[in-house]
Amino acid sequence: MTLTAIMPTLRDVNIAVASVIRVRRPGTGVVLLELDAVLPTCAVLEQVRLIGRRSTAPLATMDVVTRGDGQDDGRFQLLPAPLPADVREGDLVCFPCLASVRHRDVVEPVRAEPAPAKR
Image (cartoon, rainbow, N blue to C red; front, side, top):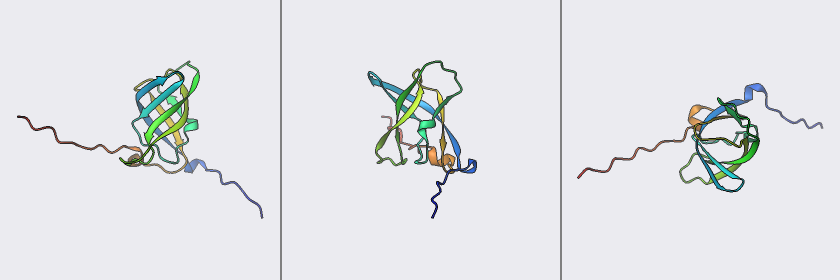
């Protein structure tokens, strides 16, 4: 019996694009990024890339803080993501996903809240 590793083909790989909405640096060497997308489980963050802006800063390992499952009661996940050390709010990043991903799979649902009543 021969075991063959199943490698994804180009048809199985999608690219997702997200915007950096917040960058926090709570301590030396610690960078936390918040994205405007829910990261699907098939996201390959080790291959994340900065797009739309050229950077000469060295790559640094960062943590992407996001709800991995898109549920309000989901736990936040810290995932390794090498990006230029000068990453900032408004930057665009892209990452491959090893399965078909639709827009609704990565969009965080927005909850409308009623405005407070005027007195």
